[in-house]
Image 1 (cartoon, one colour):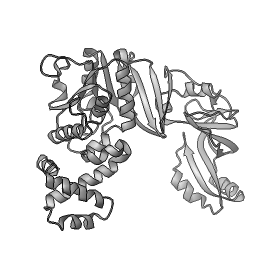
Image 2 (cartoon, one colour):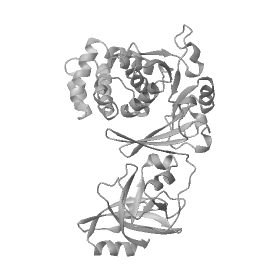
Image 3 (cartoon, helix red, strand yellow):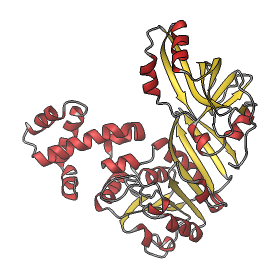
Image 4 (tube, helix red, strand yellow):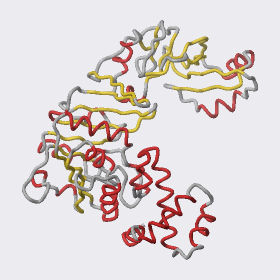
Length: 404
């Protein structure tokens, strides 16, 4: 989509095309295009409306009902923060006394809109003309055009001391740098290749006391500033992002935030502690990915009075099941050194036909193992592929209901 097509979508004819496209989204694309063009809608407008309707449909899990009124690009939607995460971040900023904020590289406006809804005046900066136009339209669509405005500019040239062009500064800055290479769309993993790059973010944190940066969850902990807080966030078991909180906003070295439905659970610590290592025990805990990425497995193990069977594998073992939002709990019913033939015989003898396969510290591919087992039984079982005392091991388990 280009700016002309976007402008056409905002005309009365475009609004009508979008409404019709919304009714056709999710079906056969060729049939939908033919149905939309039948009333005389131009081909370009029909294609833009159908694309936008499909993107809105995909955006609903992230943005809820507001998605039906917003505008998206494919790349922008992929990088956009989920509404539940951006709303929580905005609430934390507001509680810290932030009243004005610059969003550098605001994209489609997900984080800026959440901040505006929390009562924060947001100055968005976006270098891509189409994305900037969509962000402005999204602000109007959700009812915050007076609190979130967008400037078409290079984020690296933004002056936080003159956010409004009249000499007024901001209380805080937020930046979600692009983590895909321009032109190819390929992911970049070195923060130096972010846009804006890592060094710019660190320099910005030194110039603006309160700064928050969205970063890749897999970032090397060695790159993280010692005086900043690094937070990893999961939603319903999926790791969705990491963020760096700088200056007075930093409360702890490491934080794992687990969002489950309407509940928010937080585990904090230094990220440097080591969990005790010992023998297998009756119950296995598979920590939430936010806990693992935050290097808070030791802190979690302490909450269930557990330990590791291998110092480098993040499975925690304990003598008793404990209700926790930070991990799944499984009861170990059998343990054996890995052998495909022996495992297949054992599972067939127990009438196992459906297996959930978890793994840490194993090179085995779960789907290939599932095929190789050739199970025909009727009962379910969980298999955990791991190492114990540096030996490949398989644990036969049953999930513990209501425990994680």
